[in-house]
Image (cartoon, rainbow over all chains, first blue to last red; front, top):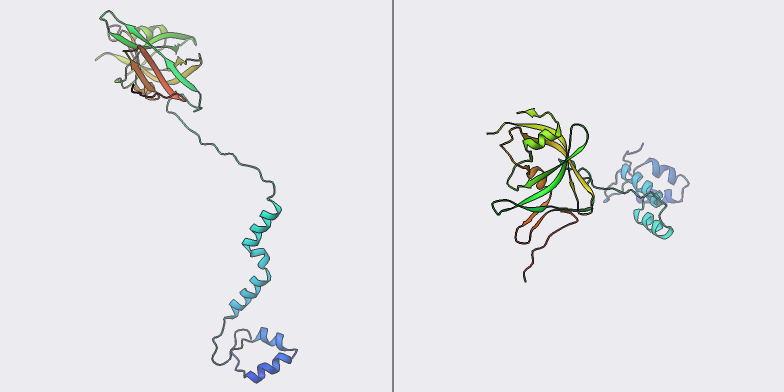
Amino acid sequence: MAGQRVPITMSEVLTLTSSPELERKMSALRVTLRGYKGTSQRFVHSIAASASVWRAKNCSLQTHLKRLLGRPEQPILKRMAAFCYATSLGRRSLASMRIDGQGLWCDEGIMRPVMSGEILAGNGSWEKSEFLVDTGADRTVFSAATLAKLGLQPLLI
Amino acid sequence: MADSGIVETHLRLTREDAGKVVFRGQYAAVTELEALDISVLGRDITSLFAVIVDRLHDVVCLLGQRHRYTIEQD
């Protein structure tokens, strides 16, 4: 019966208003008076449903209640950005990072910038070594004398 | 062209507060004594820092992380 078009006059509507069968018939029939456009039964149901559950769906009411009553305790998620280096600086912390070198005056009267460092040898000890700070060098290179002290077998290229 | 090889090891430098900074990696090494009279710190490490070489004031240092430098004019 739902969705079926039934012609009805205004007098019949007024009669039905006083009739106890009104609610049952109105729910079963889709009544469209002349000059009016019918509303789909589906929309009528959805309007009724949303009206009955408006408290649950009303977002502004939920927000208002949360503000009024306070938010329930929730764990605070702490997120941290991770940084990674290609070399073994590894973890990036905001630590002090100033490495002092010294100027090494050579026989030619030229100061050469030098850093004192240590290299892990094959026997597990740290061998001291001086490094020339060369901003033009593509990569770090150990001298033959340093390599001999390390006792490491180089992979020849 | 000098004969060279690659060694995998750790290199560490000392900060001004005596802490150690360790760099793990593969480093080149020459095998001829005459090829290099001192080891060279290259861009694989220096590019991690701001490098200051001030011959006028005899300052050599690597700066990183919380340390910065400024250039001032009198």
